[in-house]
Amino acid sequence: MKKFESVDVLAALQSIMEQNTGFYQDDLKIDRDTLTEAAEGRDPNGKTFLWLSRPSGTQCNPERLVLMGGTASHNTWRHFAEQTPSDRILAYAVELSGVEGGKVRGDLYELDYPQYAAYIQKAADPVESVRVTYPDGQTEKIPYQEFRRMDMRPFKDAEILYESKHPEQLQALLSQNHADRVRQGRPADLQAHVQDLRDGLVYHEAVRLTAAIAERRQPDSLDKAFFAAEISPHFTQLATSRDYDRLLACLPYRGRGKQLSHRPNHSGLYLFVHKDEARDRPAKHPPARKQSIKAKLEAPAPKQEAKAARPKDREAAL
Image 1 (cartoon, rainbow, N blue to C red):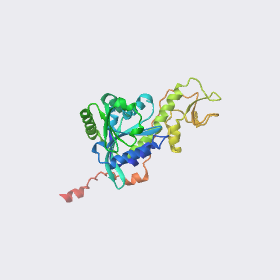
Image 2 (image 1 turned 135 degrees about the vertical axis):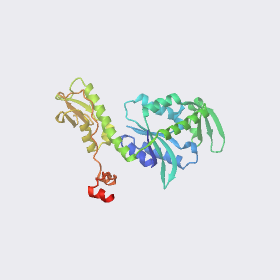
Image 3 (image 1 turned 120 degrees about the vertical axis):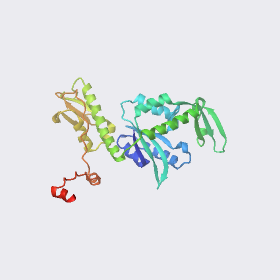
Image 4 (image 1 turned 60 degrees about the vertical axis):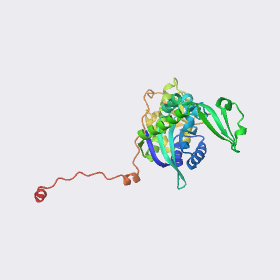
């Protein structure tokens, strides 16, 4: 598990999102408001969130609610794994430490989203009731199933707190999750991680395209000489010209046997693969990135082996 310590949380999530979310990037504005409010708040139990980026949008929820079965947060975090398993989803635990110099600071922990979705399905404690605190200070406890059927307008200005069936058990689970992250987290470089995510974006698209081409039974270009597969719309939203070059380098076809182009009467961009190409080979990983001049300058100089002393030097030492 990669850990990114004491980072500018909002800037970090922005950088991560830009490697994966092609549509509905404005979702992050809601996440920013949520995290900023929590970082400025005094509730020590409201500082841990789960955040994910998917091809169409982002999601940010308190870990406490995600681990409370039946809540919208819990259902949402399970939904994407169950309904869109082929989507590339980047997930992180966010532990806020506060606001420093106008920036929300905290630690990020990279999560394996499919694994975590399966975990919350088994570990979650069911929500039992909702405690509502009205602006005048009056409180009301409502069974959760009844609350779900109610008109939400009367609760517009109220503070709503979801309560689990076994609160002590839920708190123990949250504490254990934090301890596990601290124990398993390995400090990593955020900038390098973002570059790896960019490589992952390209490779994931290459894998998807090679699978789509392999499934075609007949050439489907107008001249019947090429198999065609559409480039993911979210990839075209994010990709630079360099990303397209790297994508072509990942595809297991000869240079003349592949090309990117548009189709008549179709929107979008397509990969065309000649019918004579072998279509059963897997995608290749992106070629290694060249180290930037700045990185080379900042890298420590390699240690040089000590030269053997000349005979007269050794004698002098004696």
